[in-house]
Length: 314
Image (cartoon, rainbow, N blue to C red):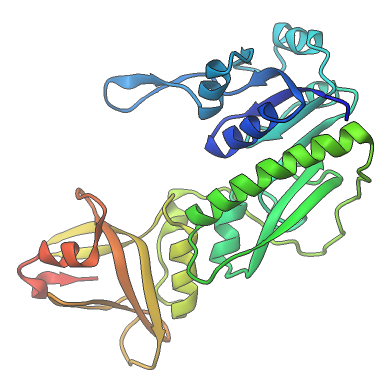
C-alpha cells in the first residue's frame, strides 16, 4: 500500500488520538498544525495543546500560526508537499489552505452527517436521547461540515452513558476511521458521496453557559438526558437557596422516575437521606453534584455537609 505524506491539524485530546493512530500507521506525518500555546490557571502558566505535546515527544514538525492566511505559514506548509491534510477538532480553514494538497483535506466529525453539524455533536446526541450516533470523515469545503462523505461508522449510545464516556469511545473509533480513510485514499478505493439532502438536519450549535441551565418544567427523562449530555463538561446546573444565599449547583449524574406528584416543577425535598427535584412528570434524584465553592462529590457526602435542611430550597 502506498504511504501518504500527511499534515495533521488539531488541538484537543480527541485530535491527539487520531494523530497517534496515523503516526503508528504506514503513513508519514510531515507536519502538525495546532493552536498557539496559552497562559492559563494560577500564575498564568503556559499550556500547550495535547496535539503539540504528542508531536514534540515524537519529533514531528510543529506549526502554531496565529493566522492561517499568513503567507510565511502557507509557504512552509506548501513546501512540505503533503499528499493530504487531516483535520480533527480544529478551527475553520481558508480555501487557500484546504485546497493545497493534491488528494484534498478531510475532517473527522463525531456524528453521522448530515445530522449534528456544528461544535457539540456528542453533547447534543445524548441530550436528544439518541440511541445511536457515529463518526464521519468528509472532504472539507467552504460550508461547515457539509462536504462529501468518505467513510461513516455507527455506534450505539447506552441509556445511562454521558457525553464524556461517549466522547472517549468516539475518540478511539474515530482514530481508526481516520487511518481507514487514509488507506482508502492511498488505494483510490473510496467513493466520495454528497451528504443526503435532509430538510431539517439536527444541529449541534456551540454550547454557552446560559445553555447549561436545567429546565425543570421539562419531563423527567428529558431532564435526565440533558444532564448526562452536559456531563462532565460543560455540566448542567441549577440553583439552590441555602438560607439567604443563592448558589449554583452543578449536577453530573443522577436517575429519574416518572410518576404523578402534584408538586411545582423545580421544587425540592431534601433531608439527611435523600434529595429529590421535581420535574414536569416525575422526580429527578441527583447522585453526583458540585455546590458552588465546593468540590465534586457523591450524594452521601453532599448531604453530610448540611445540618439544617429546612433552610434549603429552589
